[in-house]
Length: 100
Image (cartoon, rainbow, N blue to C red; front, top):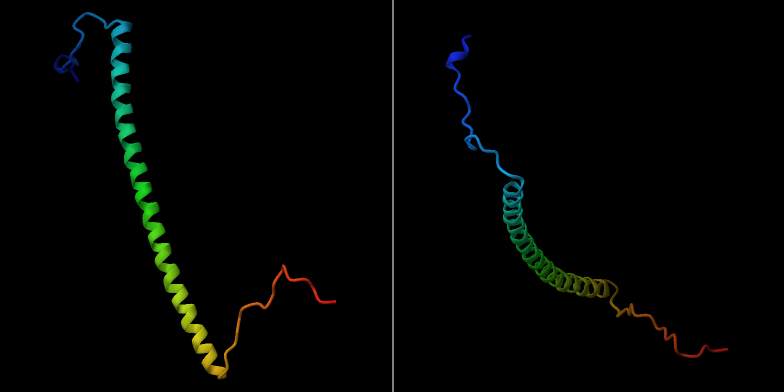
């Protein structure tokens, strides 16, 4: 295969090499842009986390009310099966002195 038909990659520096100062300044600019993207992502994720936590709180409150209603309905059904009112509350007062 002849080498005379190979196209050389262009040298963008055209005979001059970039100096260390310019390379470092360019890298600083790249890092600054990347940090701006990262900070934007962090802000978005923090807002999303707050929204998710608020939704979790709403869901838990709704579940609490549903479960309390179901428990109340179950208790009424249990009472009606025996025909008497049964108290499930403990008749215990920890501050009351013990009888001897």
